[in-house]
Amino acid sequence: MGAALRRIQLGSALSAFGLGFTVPYLYVYVAQVRDLGAGTAGVVLAVFAMAALAVLPFTGRAIDRRGPLPVLIVAAATAAVGACALGVSGGVTSTVLSAAVLGAGTAVMQPALATMLVWCSSAATRTRAFAMQFFLQNLGLGIGGLVGGQLVDVGRPSSFTLLFLIEAAMFLVLGVVAATVRMPRAASLAEAVPADGSESKAGLRVLLSHRAMVQLCVLGFVIFFACYGQFESGLAAYGTEAAGIDPSTLGIALAANTAVIVVAQFVVLRLVERRRRSRVIAWVGLIWAFAWIVAGYAGLGHGSQTMATAAMISTYALFGLGEAMLSPTVAPLVADLAPEAMVGQYNSAFALVKQLALAVGPAVGGPMGAALPGPYIVTFVLFSLGITVLALKLGRRLTPVQDKPSLATVPSRVVAVSLPESGSVASPTGVR
Image (cartoon, rainbow, N blue to C red; front, side):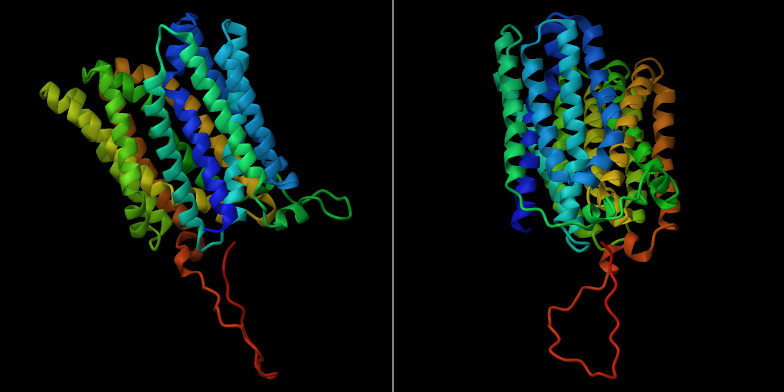
């Protein structure tokens, strides 16, 4: 990695480290520590998703017009303000408003960081850049959660205030580190505002007319709905209600998920980076379908409590394996599909799809996991198989290089001193 890319990865990891301090404990903080009740805690969690849905439609155009760096700095500062305010909020109104500010800031950071990775990488290095980001973010979240768990005390609200202040400090560190990055001049800035003052050929209409990107967004919605949207809602409710596992086991299961990602990421990367992206995503659907079947055994198999607990932990671990396979495929594919002047808008659109799935997933999965365990498992086995079908259909719309970046011609390191006047040389083809 170049110096710019290393700094971006460092800032991204530190911000994830800060998020890890508060994300696992937000519900407990609002409902019990501030004594605002479960209803308010649910509203606060919903506000995070709603704030993201409110700001992301405008984020992409701002990134493409101004560049990702200033957008990231503003987002990091906004998130820091929201974290500080949430750490000292004691009333319902102030808590909800603080959560909205924090949710908006963290939502904007995602496409800004993704666009910075695109600008600082090439088609040959992009897969590993996004895999490294996913690895570092999960490592940061895991370490932050472990350290935060040693600091919190439900009987001392000040201990939670400390967590939010640490989170705010990490966002500010992200902003400072990002400010030191010397970004390359990207074509998107030059093309976003034409010299003659006319409107650029970029926007939602262009994106919606791009059939491959629309199919990728549909696929992304199913991916996030069937996995991430169930972790802390439907799958947790199913595990405690149908499988009868102890709530503390959910923490172990999430730790197993993170451990698989951290351990397997670069082993998986070696296996998938020279294979077709659509086929890799299709395999993820099959792995997750098997994970849901294992979860079905935990709650519906009438086995011992020990076997049910082991099955639930295995389910989360299998999800982690699929996530490790997705990180070097889906995000780089969004970047490779984007026109030069619309990288920010494509990243923001995909982040918006993700937030929609994360908002709908818990609303659907939570009640089903608790009250309808059988239909719940069948539904998400089918959704996982749907990932496989959609991925294979998407593969037919991708160019060979988009589906398998290793096919791109690698430019020679040899500098031509002279060429025969009568000869013609074909320039190597490649993708951004």
